[in-house]
Length: 325
Image (tube, rainbow, N blue to C red; front, side, top):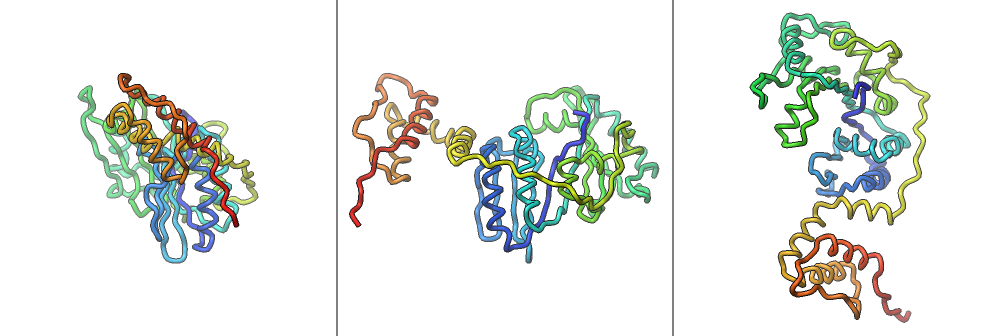
């Protein structure tokens, strides 16, 4: 991937806008199967089924701060819902407080990380008109499986409005026990709200990325366009939200908790599926159906069959008796 993409979005909204925004964000996160893991008065945390992606909202004074991780940004883009996520925020008063814009190249990262660390310590790098102080350049390295030293170089202090982080993505994924993507270096530009980034830059980060990354870190491509801080006049069209049934299906399909319950039901014996179904019906307040296919005592519990039965039971509950008024 050689086009810059959004790898983190941080925003704040007024506290009185949070209730409505939460409803809209929940609809978009349902589209990629994310569920609420923490729901407290001042903190709400959504987590993806692979446990790596999060969206965290926290009450900070008079505002709510919402941060969307790179894994979630990628999931929303793949589902065609990233623009809808941004539009939900853009429909309300807001401020972009952080944007991580990144670009990946399929090359060996080790020599690049080493060269940038050396250049930074010699005071040869800059992201703005002011050069990066050698004291603000830090590198952390380790050995790859092939014995080569590699790692990450941070250019700019943690408090800087503009900071570049360059690291070995292949090595980072290996440490997290994720599938090997081959040699890959990532340039990750971290911009704070003081730079004037907007939702437009979150949607199309290439302008801001090349404004800062070129020429010291990467040469700008011929099609790079000038970037203006605080850009306005950009419309984010709202995409029609998914219906409740589709949202429910996606949540069920991606639910790690449901997968765990299905496996646990299998450990309960030949009637584990019926036990799980009865418990779900109990939570729904639905009576057990009078005729139900029993799990054969001599057959292993099929997790796929249990899941299908569970969905069928939820989607087609028996009629409830009418209550006289």
